[in-house]
Length: 178
Image 1 (cartoon, helix red, strand yellow):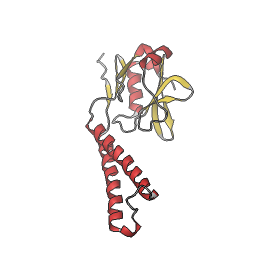
Image 2 (cartoon, one colour):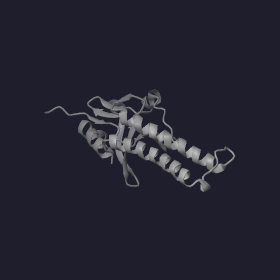
Image 3 (tube, helix red, strand yellow):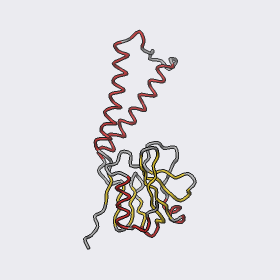
Image 4 (cartoon, one colour):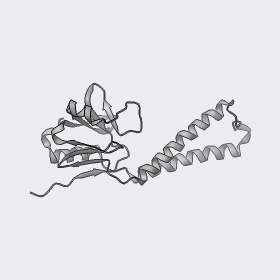
């Protein structure tokens, strides 16, 4: 029997450089618009609510530009599924051994498939995954109503959640739930 090849999911280069370019383009478009149409431009004062709103939007777009560039440059695998278990990156770098995983399944949020992983409660507590329901850019999320399960979103990754489920099925088919 041939050795099974591990599956590695990295940040997608095109997705993230595209996010950075679009963010910078939106800031530039707003600046050009107000520079060429000065009678409609907000005054450069914190007393002008339009200036405050555009400044906040520019900071948000600047954040996404920096995030896109940093993820574009990061070529480390964020999810690795191999014979030892599942390695979760995304700034946590935690390995879940196959014995610690109770089940894996694919669920859809609208049209997007997302990988759900059920973890033994004692392992979940010691893993310290720092999950947040409110962090919108995080690919690891808790699952409401399931205290020791996580959701792995494939947004911006170069491997789909379906391919990750197929990799789990290759290494441990008994863990896959429908």
